[in-house]
Image (cartoon, rainbow, N blue to C red):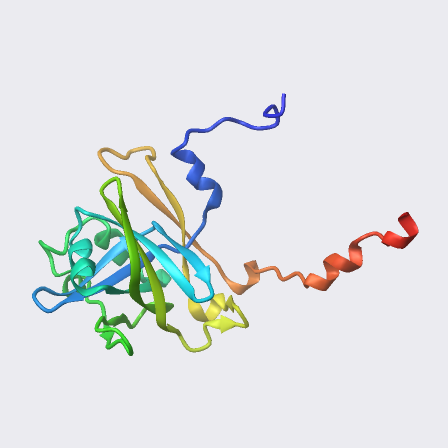
Length: 214
């Protein structure tokens, strides 16, 4: 049978096939409650021309209230030193705790949106909502990129320079031995030694000569 080489896994575990990934810290700001930060893995690139992102936000969150009111947010790519921020920002509501202050996160003003950037992040993307739709208690926001910032030396061409960027790669979460009422979250610390580059021309050079094979 076609599936014989494979082991069947659950729909929940299928998301592990596309990890590691970078989890975003979503920053918002409200005149009434101030800046807020939320961990988000439900985001994706959603178009190239113009370049835009899609972000899914639960209606239960404080972040949803602010984006509905303000129509803008920042996607921040966390560094390895921000692992505590990822944990807290994903489990505590901004209605109850000033997470920016509690986590002692340094911020700098955004350039084109009224939302602060996270100073210790690998980079920040300033986003403005251009459209949205609601499905199963979440709102899916399509946002255009107003401005994007990366730490100095953080890009090697179009690839993150891991030694300079110090990006935190998320491996997913699951219950581990000793876990009671919670899950362990797994992260991967990468370096430039782990990066492999393969010139695209090498693929074409490896192809058989079509004229000689006819």
